[in-house]
Length: 68
Image 1 (spheres, helix red, strand yellow):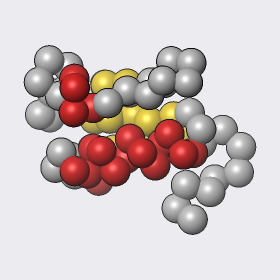
Image 2 (cartoon, rainbow, N blue to C red):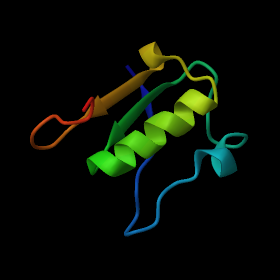
Image 3 (cartoon, rainbow, N blue to C red):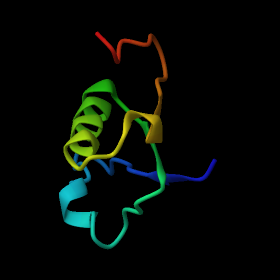
Image 4 (cartoon, rainbow, N blue to C red):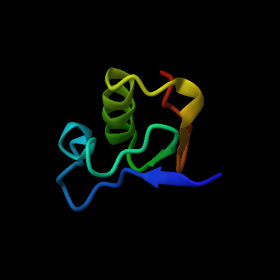
């Protein structure tokens, strides 16, 4: 699986709406990792762009509280 990474740099987060036309690919898988609040924000942004759940993947470092 090849994934497009949406990463956080320092305290600034990636706004997927700003990069959707130049970086995001229609048939890509999206891998999200980092702190859970960041992951939830990116997950919601991808959902708002119509990315299906089957194309979103995440990895939690520590207790998996993502779905809570």
